[in-house]
Image (cartoon, rainbow, N blue to C red; front, top):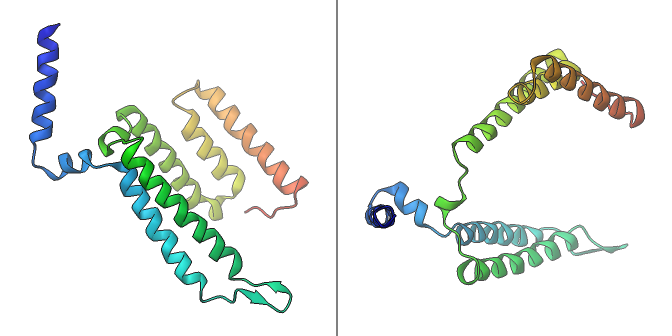
Length: 169
């Protein structure tokens, strides 16, 4: 057991001593980088909100809501940056999913891409059924995946087309 601990310590020292770009990225504070990007985004929208009038003849103008919202977002970003540097530090290397979870994300992305490519040509029911089948095929028996994908798509179609009168392709 002591040998395993020593091997783990050596592996940590080796990873800390690596000079590669991926090792550098994995050591970075993910919260700090996200907070800085969110702060830049908020400052950009705060600046753009000054292009819209703050008041109109009827009261609040089209610039009031984005100005206040982006101002509050700047405050939230600064608070998040402070928290991610002091209270809850997590590294980029700790926030990536494992191999199986990454495969699941890729599967969902691929099925959504297929849905978007087929939607206008074959319609909502066929494209939606295919999207759900790709998602369900690994987790259920084939006949159950087919039944679930068609059933859920038909229910969604009926709800949006009949109940809400939303035009679907």
